[in-house]
Image (cartoon, rainbow, N blue to C red):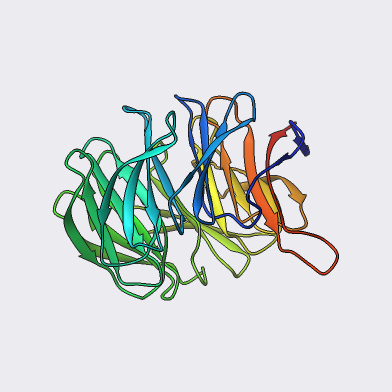
Length: 305
């Protein structure tokens, strides 16, 4: 049951590494943080639609109602709104920290950006594009964050403390901590809304499922360190990046099961699943050596059961 290439790799300019990947399945766009630019790829053709120069991009969060996307400028300590059609930044607000991951709650109209190696989550009103709050969180290395669209809770991984901080998004207050002692150096975090489950993994070859109340449901061994994952709730499949791509089946009444693993060298930092097609998008780059220049690629893969 392999993961196979659905299309050849596409060379990306400029070369270099990547951070988070997200998909706007409605408007058929793949977004990837790529150094100082936001890379935009057509999810149907695989062609690079363009790049937007921002500075120190790490995360992105699409707004499917407008077709725009929110991202951060880590160099200038700002959160931006980008129009992917005109390839222009249309709004920007300064914040008091370097932005890493970003999430968007469309019902509240709030953008959440966590502070890279910091202790805060900045909250932006998407309509006025002004900062309306700062949430202090424990630890000093927030990683990925996820949103519960029903309760408006924000779940924030804390890599330094093996825990998940839970924030009331409406009141913008920290409400509780979910310890995850099975996981070391928490990185990926996904919220499975149909199953009411938090999926978390890290650097110690373990993955766990928790209830939102903090009850441990299961822990499995994982074939490698995990960097970032993306969950397709319609198929209940989750793709993860580490020493390649691993695809898992999420089960409601038992542990997740590994469906397929495809090693890659170098391994991708992040991947994303297209909810429409189930295709897996990966981005990766290589550094320049004495004999070869730096490179960067985006490629679409597919699971063949």
